[in-house]
Image (tube, rainbow, N blue to C red; front, side, top):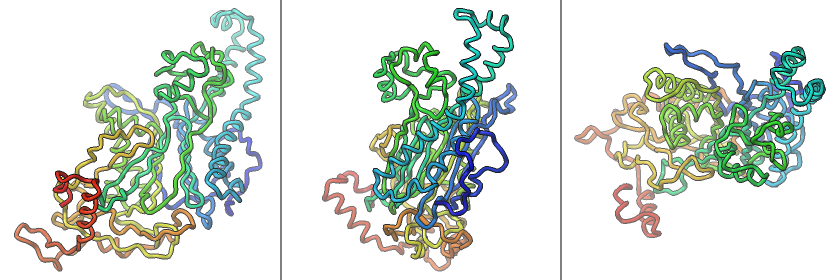
Length: 521
């Protein structure tokens, strides 16, 4: 499928990290940006230092520009970076070489996607087979019933070698992978890395409201569904709930042999009737349409660091809101992603210094942003943000600053931590997001999004060097052409007839009550 990629001579890669890898031949998706930060632990004086090597890996490739096939992934390694690196190299190979050719239905693509996860898992375990065999032979040299202390005294070389092999075999990784193909978005995951999709509300009377939906399942011992799955394997639910398997709570991952083929060696898992930790992915799919604004893929280091720092119970919503604010401030997707990561890193470090919350360290952080049609303030944008690629984007419009109540959060009470449950993102932005010199004007980020959609698939990046004239004109708007009222506000100059008609229709349909009407006028 990729014209620029060279198929690796051996897909059973050993995980050796060189400066040059076969994926260097894959074109990077220009409609995405990546932010990252290495793990940190804090010394007593607040000085941060790395606790271990950087174990996250990420990918963001355009596999087939003409057919609109893109691949993104975040892999959060544990007990070393080997498994994460291996998965980041192998996953594109499982989806790049005609595996998707001829797959036109949603179910066919989902099956290929599922098979890709399992193929990466099998290939990684095969790559460590020689080490597993050597370990088995060494264990046979130590008499049964001998304690670890006695073994170290009597077989020091064997024990030292076993420790090295255990470290190399132990590694595993989470995976959250997004595939765009045929106008559809497919998201699969194992572990606790997350994918969030931000969409525009479809109701006209809620214009400007974004919804954030978690597309992934958290596969940990804190998940009710996962605890029930493990209980069905003859494990004690009360013992499994919140327990750690080694250094983590993951119930699904790629790699981590000891929790799979070697699970009998762990007391908490030894009674299982089948392998308790699996690589079977959770997969979600949906069409990409004009309501899709942007997609976030993140390692748990991002949302857990934010939660540790704030104690928030709406971390998905608040992280998405941070991204929205940076769309106004930053010129590129990479700068948006990195700024959000840096803000969370600083917030976490500040909490350690001020002792507001008990934080002493944090994990690696990775964040990928894939934009669909959310406008950048100073963006270098393609001529069209949605499929078709021919219709220019309408100019962004200035709207008078709404009253504060128009920017209240959703009162639905929904929990954004619950899988697939929608949560409103505040549509209002802080005063720092006002356009320079606008005297109270606010840029409506949801105006000017192209509505040209056809059946050819996802967004196509046509020209990364094309500057949007309309966006540039908004950077330093001149208000001399508008008359101001006695309070210094611009007189209304936008026709809101359709807006008020939609409100009346919503009231008649019972979607809003009489007591709520004042919120929309």
